[in-house]
Image (cartoon, rainbow, N blue to C red; front, side, top):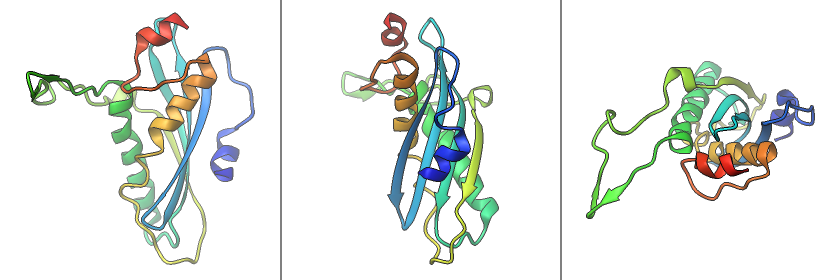
Length: 163
């Protein structure tokens, strides 16, 4: 957590309408922390500009693979945070494929930095651990930018517009 905060510039001021949030997670013998940096527009639109991650997965056998899995986890986790609502009507899911379920587009992807902690511990897992802390990091960043606590995903732009 300290490494992610340090590398993100935690504590340095951001312009109005921008904020940083942090969240951590542990699973599969790996620790991960994300710092999300967001901007919130007057219309309530949230843009995740940057995510700085620190990963302690024990011995990183393939550091490029650790970076790639962390980047993929961040981008995967952004869909339900920003746009990926699944709705139910008459007991059935309304979305059937990518034409009516908006996944993250490349122009929405944030700048991502992954910092791997040097370790001699046994290798841990790196597929899933990067997903769970992304939503709370973004929600904390939105709170820092607006003072509004998010309690539901995807982010409700109307709620932020009122702020």
